[in-house]
Length: 293
Length: 283
Image (cartoon, rainbow over all chains, first blue to last red; front, side, top):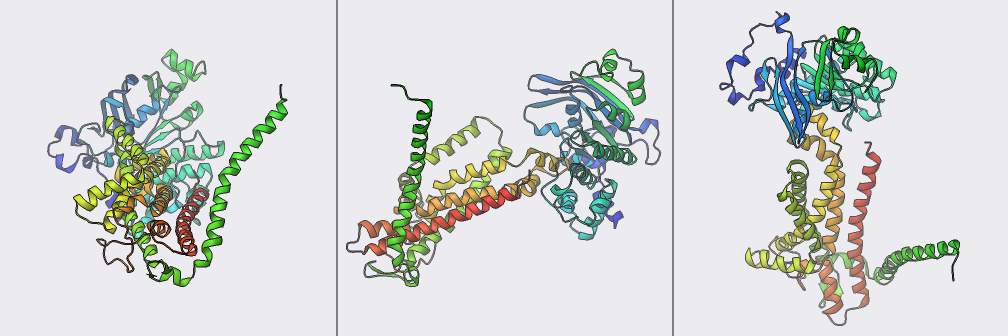
């Protein structure tokens, strides 16, 4: 059952470019030089931004950020409020497009495909790049219907297949044991932490490759936060995770790489241990040690 | 002479209380008189029989049915147009001079006197489009009259659906239209229905818009198609009260009571839906 599911759900990045335009697309950027299974250093970059700038009207919220984000690792974005880290995150699934007056310049490459080129299918992009929001936002539906929402709208109607997807997604979100007997109850009856994990399961159900998390634990109590962090740790085996957080300890705990943003600029980016133990930039050090922000 | 603050407060409160009483009194008096004088007229025959003897006897069945047909016709026309327009304005349109024009037009449409709608309907539907005086013309005229109510209520209902629901859906790779169809509309539906019913109940009670477009003076049979004229309660009441001599007061008040009852039932539905929606709303 599940394999059939995967076949239906599997979105190749090549599909990102609309089928009609596929022939036109530059072969240089769509061909994958390294075959599957041979993941090595050269192929381990999942997301690459080049001189990425974002303008809200006349304000420059993000200034020429170039960054390489590793596959199947957790990358944390830290910095004070208004530093552009959420803006950066929302560029990766083009969520900024939904806000009027936003202008994005530069490139975002996912598996070497520029997701801002004109013939990109945004709907397919967002299937590949899932997103978890700061405030858990389950729909006012049952737990089952929440998780099945994406697959259903992507054309899966077979009840058995949907049940498999829901079970698998809830297991991956470490929630199955807690809710398996009440899947038909409203998701809004769950605790805040459980609601957030329903949202994670809902995102996993469409089989993404990348998961963006915008301060996913900032509204949760410490125990729920610990559960979500544990979950992030498990998820990185399968997914590339980019997480925005205000909580420095959290960044240190969950991430492999950390990027420090300040006033729209990427100040420093490197392995998490290095950023937290031997920051190269004075401003990074000041922020991490709590001297401002 | 200075009055103490305590006295001033007492005076202020009595004026405020008086204003509130003035609002309630007419409602109670109207209902009391209608029920007292109209209830004796109402029986099964009054509701289900054709009028006889130049409307002085018999029932008001064709007028009741006529009003129901007009209400249904108005729903069929106004509900889809109103909801679709609201979706366009809330979800798709960018704020520019064009959408501001549409919004100004809607506000102005709401301020047009109902008799002007009647004349407009006669000019456009009855004469120009050659629909004649018919249920079709009447429903279209009433629809235009209540469109602003439906659009305004629908816009409010759509905007009250949290942005986070839309973002969650879009972030799952669901298209904008699917998001509207499967997340926004279901959550806005109770609000849309409430606004629609209130608009419809207004349409049910109006006389002027149907005067020139559909209402028949005396037609003791049911209409055969939407191109037929029909009787309608508000116009029938007007006719009974001013155009036909020697109609017993009982029949007049009975007709008024049926009309008010019909509108009251519609409004009651709106209130029930709204309170049900409030109890279910959890965000």
